[in-house]
Length: 107
Image (cartoon, rainbow, N blue to C red; front, side):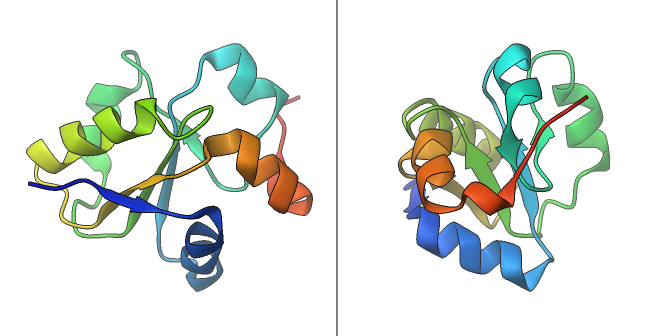
């Protein structure tokens, strides 16, 4: 099974459709400082709830720092039955450069 890798520009198009799940697998401190708009944190603590509640057929975007770790997470989600999951090349660092207005922070 091949891993779907998409550009930040393609990810942005998914977000404009407003029907996708956005995951951020970076560490909690980085997530709080800034994450793609609408992203939910995904880590060992949040994974069971996400798998129980997520729509495995909805487009799912996976962000990490630079687009490397998200490939393993994408493969894992595919193995869990997610049919439309994509690793975002360039990760949050590229996203932050291209779409500074599409970033949220936690207060």
